[in-house]
Length: 158
Image (cartoon, rainbow, N blue to C red; front, side, top):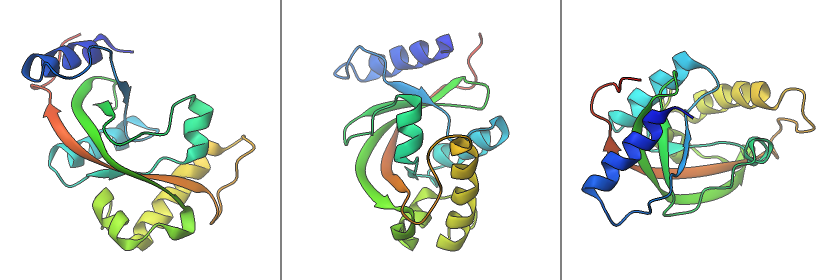
């Protein structure tokens, strides 16, 4: 974990002292740096207000299913902490049951369900490759909506 995560959390706690002292999970929104940077920019601009990891990938990473009220730190593609978000709602759905409204809220691509399905099928196929999990209409997806609470001052220095 980059030390920018602890610095950003300390900065956020400085303006919101009621939040827990313990560091929340930190992650980027992708499995590659270029896409992580693009998705972070969507979060910072207010377009991306949701994310959709699969239950399987969370299990493989040893990460819990997010719960309403949870905090997280979003990093850029280089692992530098850039934003604090808080989970607003979570619903586990089958891949086939993700709807147009959620795809629009996730804010990626052209914000259509068709684009969402194609992009996420590719993503899930990459992150679940070589595991016992298969990408299908029955794959459980964690449909998480969140609020952007705090954006880092421009780039931290290491």
